[in-house]
Image (cartoon, rainbow, N blue to C red; front, side, top):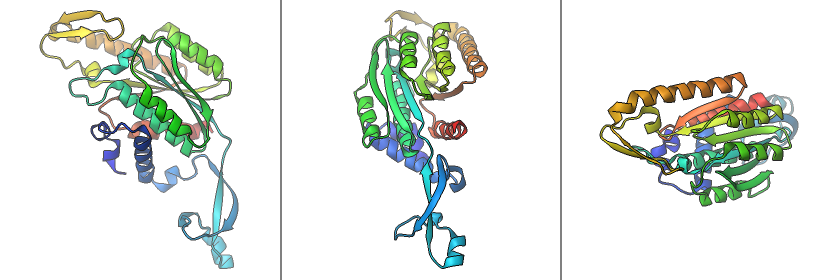
Length: 297
């Protein structure tokens, strides 16, 4: 695998989500050991004659030894699964730290595009929804030609605006997702509380598989500030000026408690959670999804 294809410092310079998704996913897939990826979502159906240009790995050499003819194994995708990608595009996702080249939303958009391309490549139905305090975008799950392009077009259009209303939007989406599938929810989850947890548990109650992807900036994890800093809440616009040394430990203690509570909620409710910062490679996210998709079958 070409590791640079998954490096945020490289992909930050590209804003064509269709191109990014195809480049990243195909680079990722080509780096997987053949036995890991072959067979994901496929089962053997029948043979057909070899045609020039066919992938030689699907030739059945035992048949060739018996008949002296090249026969190709043909695989068929299993029953399509609905995969619902849900993106928080509220104002808090606009943050980019001092060292970050990507905002949280830009990075989350790249994850969405990669998932859409990978899911479509696997033969599953993929849908896309984006929200803040309102539902900004909704593309029903499908596998038609152009589905990934339509999703990437919506990603290009999206801006980080509005306050986040997880509870109301997720409840409405839960009622909309009437076919069992995989719900992939991407957010920074800054305001995770009991109301949000109820909305997410509703997905589980209706027999959806849930994957939560928490996108954070390194600043939020490490609090590296040194001199006087003015913090501005991107949603409420409240301001606070302080000296970081006075609040660093209190902030880190509070952040770690929040993360612990969040992880415990996911563990108790059998929900997958992937935590990632905007400086991290995408390889773990893509590998984790492939693994989870195989378990879901």
